[in-house]
Image 1: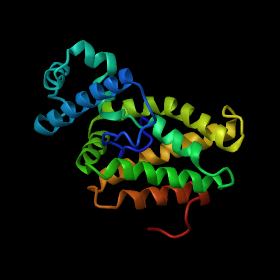
Image 2: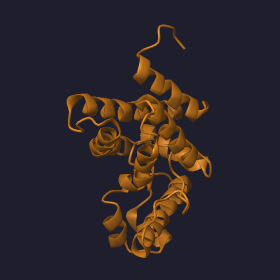
Image 3: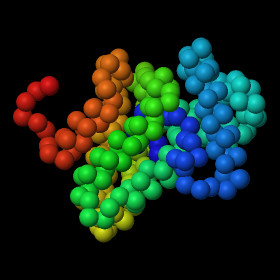
Image 4: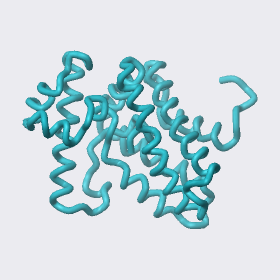
Length: 214
């Protein structure tokens, strides 16, 4: 889910993903190889110096294959395989559970999945969001697509019209808040616990701006 949390970066295990067919698994494997190649090259020589041809060569695919899966280099950095996982997590929560509790659980789940295996990649992605204008710009562009997907999930979970103003405002507030959380984490040298920062973000969305300064 592009931009849902920038710390969700590791490859999902079979247990984490909904059942998918062989063809889709091959696609996921190819996307993950392209991402892994990109992360390695960026760490070695920097983002601007990394080219699509180099990425294709490292991932052992053609440049056209890279573009087939990722329209831009920025998309390689930003996208992941978690859309279906996160939406399924929302759908599986108890129907009587208050919505704020549901979204808090799901966001914690997303962070745990993303940082439990390779936090260095999480740090790299969020660093690029802060340091590379093209990555940050693409992140902003992707927020509308992520927002529509979250609106559908909120509508299913709450019984509200997913196209209602209230749902759209809530969904985009959540996505924007999480994007700012990721950038704050990177801007402060990744010193803070990211899961604690997400909790602070959700507290603001649920209760408003706190009266005391941190």
